[in-house]
Length: 326
Image (tube, rainbow, N blue to C red; front, side, top):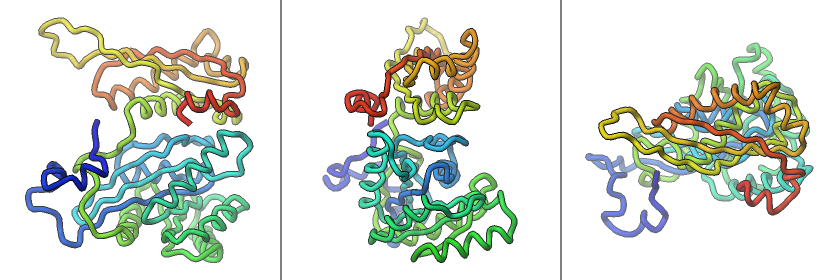
């Protein structure tokens, strides 16, 4: 999958070929970037998926799920919205946590609007106040979003919206339910109003610019996080080592067969045992669950080869963090 670079976008009259629809785009077409922020497990990834209409970011009931900035692209006749989903801002305890926070702050300075997610089923706490204080230093407009609105009563939602209003100065406050697809279009409209007038940034039909190997790793990581102890999400990293296509016999009309080799890294042998399960039963479940998503992503049959390895204290090791993509 390839996307136009900044140089290509300004290279000349043929540089935008494929981006321009037959009738051109409207004069008031808007396109830009919006960043989703919030404390861990605030519903950012689920909201990203709902806005795009496809599964782009992995979701989990466990905090600290997102490890990479994921771009999802929303296409409208009147504009294009590029969503940047970030790791949750938090008080870091490791080098990894510090780098994730740095990643969020860097992203905030490069977008046209910020979406501050505050889950309606939880009271505003110190983590939200910490983020609100950081956002108050930004010149970028901030839209506060009450996520998970379907989980609470109307009365509780009204209380939550009042609490959000008192927390800071916002361009707008929008309650949404990503799961039930309520108010998602309203939020899209609000965000597009903050985007600059200009041509689309990505071709029609493109939903993300996330590399395939990163998306595969995230699908495996999501499957591995299902039903595990609280400690594991912070200690699990996934790396796609190799993807190879098997030779095909002449006349074979079936989708190609790919061998996908993936390593799962944990910090302690006890965590390795959790991932593998008795007799390898849990690792097989992880492979079965992840393979379905990977086959849909790649449009191919997949043999998924999973290995669990112990990398002691990898969250604090600069060399290991670099190898794992952080």
